[in-house]
Amino acid sequence: MKIRGERECTECGTRWSYYETGSIDCPACGSLHSVGIDDRTEHTDRPVSFDLTSIRNAIDDVPTDELADRVRDHCHEFVRQRGFVSGGELRDLTDTYLAAAELHHVADIIARESSFALDEREELYFLSLLRDADTGTRPPADEVPPPLRAARGLAYANAISAYRRDLRTWLDERDPDLTSPERAALETLGEHVTRVRMLDGDIDPPVADRLVEVTRDLADGLRGTGNDDAISRARKQLAELE
Image (cartoon, rainbow, N blue to C red; front, side, top):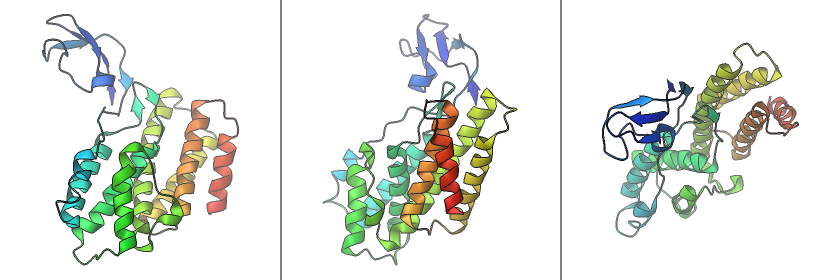
């Protein structure tokens, strides 16, 4: 949505950025009465912290399925609130977001399916995600246990879908009439994501990682970061995935 992110309190005159705080309350006096002092700008992101410390501290005190239930809710809230356009600027698809999305889906399987009995490798994978997800560390593709590979595939597909939606919104705002190989590549990426979701994420983890790489390359190319090969690299990888 478009908002005026730079705010001025009509009660005390304090100015602040909604883009940074995510709050309409005046940080000085708490008043809800403010006016925007800038132009309306596309904004989909909310500043929200992602800290799993309190859940990790409960590892020895609660059963794994209850731990997974807490993890699932925490990760869902983080993923739900994060967007990729902040004050008109396109943000990255970060490793932290991807790790949170995957941990959400892995925890959902463990918490929801009573018939899902974890073996040692699967439990260690869940715990490794819980240990590192809030630092943006993701396990490599070759460490994903086969019963959990669909969780990674679906998590990444959903993350890319959300990112692609914001990227298109950002692109339409900047150049709504643009027709280019970049837009064609975005459409092709969307087709791959749809296919993965129809398979409930059941794809090889390296393929999921490559779709993330394509998404990041497209974003870099469209932002004009100076990486002239990004779009060409993305299109090549998409063609290889056909």
